[in-house]
Amino acid sequence: SAAEIQQLVEASYADTANAILTKFNMGLSPEQLAEVVSGAYGEQWHHPDITPVTTLKENQNLYLLELGHGPTLAFKNVGLEFLGRYLDMVNTEMLRALGASSGDTINAAHNATRGRSKLHSIFLLPETGPSDVQMLQALAHDIETAMTILISGDFDIAQDAIKTFNAPEHHNFKAENNFISFNSIQILRILTQMVYYFRAYTQLMKQEVIQNGDEVDFSVPSANFGDALAGHWAREMGLPIHSINIATNANDVLHRFLETGTYTVELLPSGIRKPATQTRAPSQDITVSSNFERALFWACDGDSSRVKGWMTQLKETGSFTVDYGTLTQLRSIFTSSKASDEDIVMAQQWAWQECGRLIDPHTATAVFPFAHGKKPSRPTVCLSTAHPIQFSSPDGVPEETQYADEVAILRNRKPESGKHFLRSGTIIHEIHAAVVEAVSILNEGRAPIEDR
Image 1 (cartoon, one colour):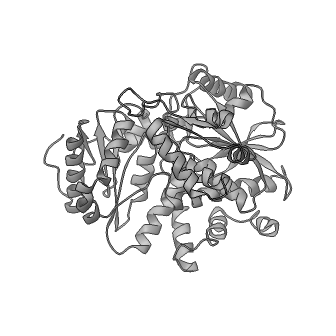
Image 2: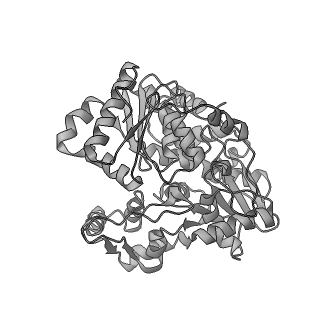
Image 3: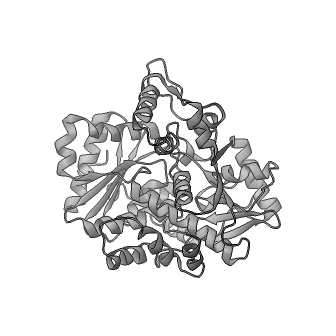
């Protein structure tokens, strides 16, 4: 309610998180929830406001929600720092997060297990795609509860390999090792991401940019749609959000869908989905947005049979088309934009030359419409999903120096193959063997048999 939002204006980030997450039944006492929240948003963050809102361009109603001040400098720390502590508190048995990452989830997941007594992290990482800093974070970490498996293929190969663990022949291995998912469809990640939408709104109130009840817009770098979905759910809870822009890179399936009502992915002659195009914003290089069907479920008034039918069509034919009513409902809150690699560079250059701000390539997709000349009609917050020091700057833009000391520590720590990472080829049985080896290393604390 408006009264509850008003009470959050002077609240800390942890208090805001408590106020929002208390609305959901998580199986924790108020004291336990407060303990998890205070640990998740504590001294490991590099900024006292956790996710500060700052001005992007003076007198233009443009703001940045800075989400890259966490321990691994990416927005995924918001959800995973909470999730790691939550799981460690509520479970009595050892759990193992198993997944694949294009560069940012792996490091946030690894760090979420730091110091946890009942949680391990095992992630596949492709050799191509992640930035130099992301690769250093994944290979030169010092976390005893985490293991990286570096594969010689791309992200699609890694993701498909993880899916094979759901096959019947691997059921016993998966069950015995209590594998869980840390990916973007994890519901607790979405709930915790809602918090920074409320936090952004109350910070704008505190800065006297808006008054309670005024509507704001958000522009969100989008891939698996989790961030945009969190904003939508915050709106459903009563936050005065007018619209959410789904900002895509060259992998623009969501942008095309909102324009046409047809969701299409390209299939190879073999029937396998064509891999995503590699871009300057690698974390957005995705063709099937895992969380989007949740938005479809809302837009068609909870008709699960229709959603299931659309997803079946997508799997079998590579496309589906929604009815006019569903599309109209989605368009009532979501807009969209597309940024090519050239557009991303232009947005980064504009942010520096016109605003004096350094932004990473993913944030640039959210900023691009405004760099291209769009004028905000109300206060607009662009989500800055990663710290720019993780990526090289384009021509005409200086390199980021904030947190350079942290990166220097990683560069001086020689990654040791076999200590906290293994290598694997792309053949499924090689990857499976590497996962088995990683489990053994983490369980027994021993050196690996060999460097794969």
